[in-house]
Image (cartoon, rainbow, N blue to C red):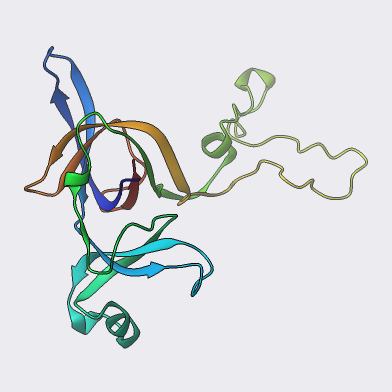
Length: 199
């Protein structure tokens, strides 16, 4: 299984050999350093822990420095069911190739408190029914004989900042020199969002 961590940069156009235009997201990915191998004997499961995005040692905790041994990193992440690695191995974008089909996971943009029209796609009330100020209101929530609001009732509330997974995305290009992946289509999150790429 191929995997890497990266940060979303921006979107751009790519032109294929036949002249077709492809919408592309640029991801600045890796390199990752393997910091720990988890085994069933010591941890109860099989996984590889990797570190990404170096930072000053003065900004890291003593616990982090003691665990990683060499350098300090902003992100530690685990990928399960991977065994064939040793501590100190490096993972770069060269593991991927043009045409690979991948799965990308990231945190979507936070939108704050939103009403039912934006959050759930409600249509609101019609002006033709004699109302001026309630086009975007939720309307009745089905009172009847009940004395409480049913669980799961769609209402206004906090929207965004969810963990989103997008499957079956295609890699359009790999730039090994600049540690970048060009991925066809859109990816969740703002610029700078940490994304997990699995192939």
